[in-house]
Length: 468
Image (cartoon, rainbow, N blue to C red; front, side):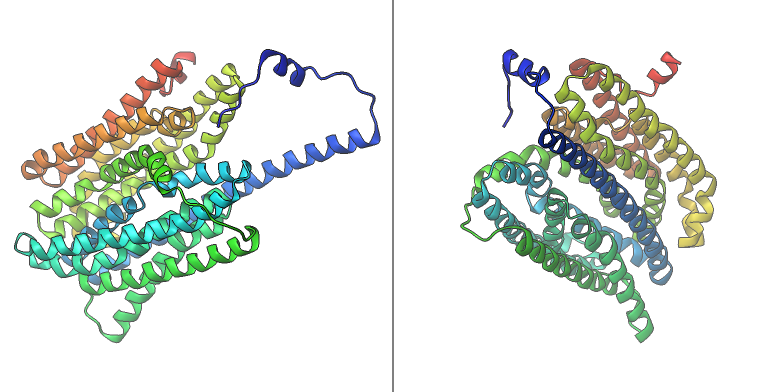
């Protein structure tokens, strides 16, 4: 896929032969300038739209979690949190990493004119996600039935119902990547991040109004409706855009190549899911549901800090790739310093604000949830450690270090699992927070070392102090 030009070719491009100016050449030049400006404006609009959708989604999700905790109580809320965590992990890996890989494969097929493979990928990837999601769903259901004696009765039925969500969650997750790759940001983001939580909250409000029990089973049934509604709406939106923009024609399928090329991204994505959710799963194995609910509320409240990290990372990744491709080393180093600064200082301010408001925010879930405030303090250290190296994993992926990132993510995930298994039985909620913080700090340190050794980039906040 890479294009390499000889020295003569480069000289020809950078030092063109002198030509007489004409109206035609002037018009062509003006057209290119206008087109470039239009592309930049389009990218800026997309970035702003993504930011607004994710901000609105964070607000809706946080509000809905407060309402659910108030309606359901700590115990049933904790059971629902455990079930939804399983759906997040199993649904997120069911598409085998093809979802994020679409952002690389689709543009390549489109630009290279391989429209048969483009059409095949647009259809085949969605069927792959649905079929694999269904297989994982049946496997999860079979495991729950087969090992029912090992699963507490309080968790068993909600977990079986939750398995129904997996195929549609996988489909939505894949179409998120498809929409981003095609530049259809509303198609990619609005159904999973806005529609799904709103439908969940609406269904719970309806159940509350008609007198249904506000328990984990009702919440899981509402989640099933929300997943199916979001996936159906998104699928219809995707199909309409495909019919309008992709010319009809033959299709070709290369499932082996699609899956093979997606495996490094699957490793990174799966490891990130494990890193984000292992604490909840391990807590559920050792502690009662109401403790799980309290921990989840504290962890998700503190995790709002990570919104800065992902926002900056998503915005700068493509720019790092462009600077690297141009060989502009000075600009790359300066941009790395800016990216770390943009990540760390807003994260520090957000952390301070959340720690000041932590107990009142937890009280909104339930007065008893304020017991989990120490969890926020411990997790704050991990999130700040991660922010201190900026959006390092985004930068490394953009500069071709995907395999190294996958190795770091997998190591951090294994460390997180091991520490949780050791520390949770000993220290409960605080043990889970310590395990997560240690895993985050380890991953951040490894990312910074790789950036220094392989790319010569200092992706730490210390560079700002050293250079003053």
